[in-house]
Length: 166
Image 1 (cartoon, rainbow, N blue to C red):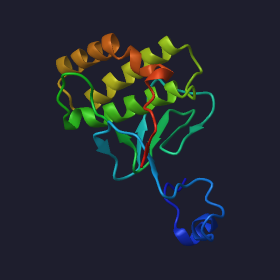
Image 2 (image 1 turned 135 degrees about the vertical axis):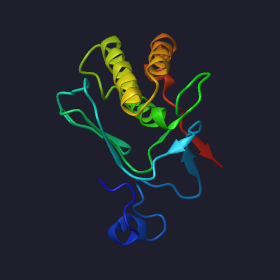
Image 3 (image 1 turned 45 degrees about the vertical axis):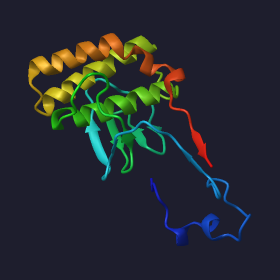
């Protein structure tokens, strides 16, 4: 998947003004707000417990039946939520957690009931924190906080609204 096609490879971008351009805006922008971080390179995160029956692919990530979560360069997320401090040992886990919750909110990751998926996603979060060197008591506390307070974030109503300017 190419996130940003070359202009020369995309006839829509070089079409005369007003023709084509079905997937682009002109004269205004569409955006979302609230993100703190953005991936500079595509990354693959191997998951232990999330195994959808078919591949899921969006413009910002892919999830394979074998448990590989691919976050494309440019993926944006907000880091750990709540009264916490982002650190190198939490960045990959928070990116994966946010992407998996987003897939649930969009009803793309729905092969199990939401509560079961949420538990598995939170377990993945904890495992990635430990794998990336987080102190075990801190990882345990973070998992407890995510389990206790992040339930709203998996609901479709929590999806960020698309804003327009001007």
